[in-house]
Length: 126
Picture 1 (tube, rainbow, N blue to C red):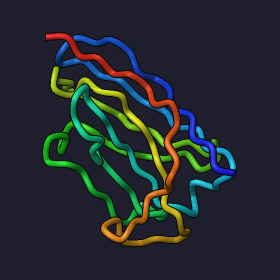
Picture 2 (tube, rainbow, N blue to C red; picture 1 turned 90 degrees about the vertical axis):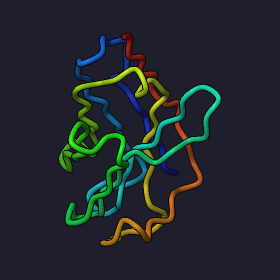
Picture 3 (cartoon, rainbow, N blue to C red; picture 1 turned 135 degrees about the horizontal axis):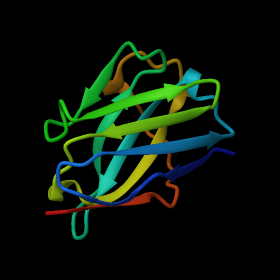
Picture 4 (cartoon, helix red, strand yellow; picture 1 turned 45 degrees about the horizontal axis):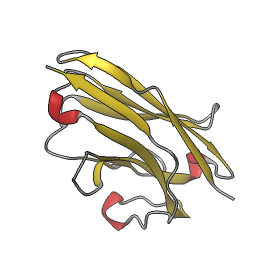
């Protein structure tokens, strides 16, 4: 059974940085495309970034391009989201997720797993 545990959120001032972590169990992150979503109050959950299983293909929402970076540590079976130059509009609960199928090379073809962890709250003050 897949379990994803997000951590690393917190309160930060605008312009600051945070690094979120997603520890996976029941899934080898090196074999699966992974991604980060976020949901702000009153808004739908949106895809922030995704990475193919081998890192050869990535996607970033326009709102985070140049500021956020997705990465993974296969030895730790963990995916990260480095967030720099944070803005108040980045305030949300952040979730990681994984592809249903392994070895996906094209992020546009990812079929996200029907599972959501507890997420981690990121609050950016102005």
